[in-house]
Length: 410
Ligand SMILES: *Cc1c(COP(=O)(O)O)cnc(C)c1O
Image (cartoon, rainbow, N blue to C red; front, side, top):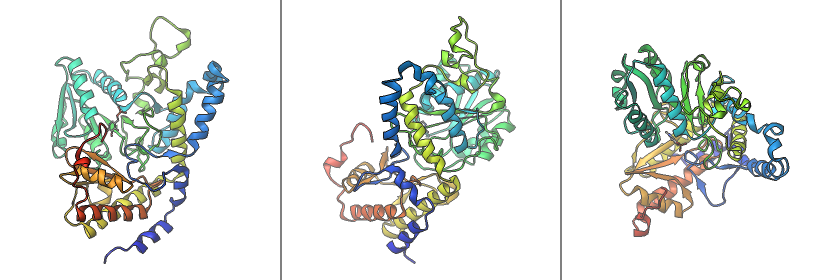
């Protein structure tokens, strides 16, 4: 039986998260399906940034490091993020960007795992992760080998010479998820450490880092956590490893007591050591509002809605434009919170959708991603999107020269 708009509207009526959308500024006449790349702005950010700028910065100035708790923000926000990813207080801290955090943790892991040479990772995942690993391999000058394989060969690739396994939990293009528990155990069985990149899963589903005995993780502040453009990232180190992992960018913020200004670096014995230099307070303040907003929702409801949105999208595409190739798993539990389709002129299609008010993104060479942020995407949004997509495909209106000229950011 075909799905009707009435069916979809009743899904919105029964949505336990329906009231969350009010917490975000969503532009009029726009269906925003790119929260997997840059989350929408929580309304409360405006007031928080205003207060930060006009009071804490303008009036309180340097006193704010103590009086407005600026110096400990990265830790206290880390503790809030811990609740979203199943970690304990003191296991997560906000700092830098994902690329830098990945560098710190992988180098720390290699030092700890002396005698083991390999970094095992997935082929064809997000480029920055591969680039950072390549940089590390160059730095270690032949002492480190990157083993990048297809998913199906991962089990074979992890062996007694593997120092660390570095994987992205939900794939940035296909949305395909790893079984975090199975792969974590696989790594541990061989004595390797595991590092999960949560960029496309944190904030979109429950994650159980402690329960699954995960060693390290990194994640992004500006995607499903809605921390704003260039929001600082976060990293997690399991408590049991904090005293034996030493990250290489040993700056003063990671010192046990930075204000003694001692000559020698003494690492903080806890998660603070993962910091390097002065944190961006403006970035932290906006991120905190995003995290506070996310903490209002029950992550089980979030995951449930995310799966239903994805499923509805897939069913409607199959119902209305059966020729379109779905490039994400159809099984709900194998898929993250976005669904990708393939089209050989994918970029032109994203531009034509944008002209109709539907914002999605394109990933070369031929993938269009539809990101569903359960806190503010409605079921009706999915219906309208597929209606626009069907119209564009049927009338060929994507086929314009102006749609094929790529902008700098796609
Ligand atoms: C978004 C994303 C990043 C972002 O890295 P930055 O260094 O913070 O820009 C890294 N890895 C993955 C898998 C991502 O999706």
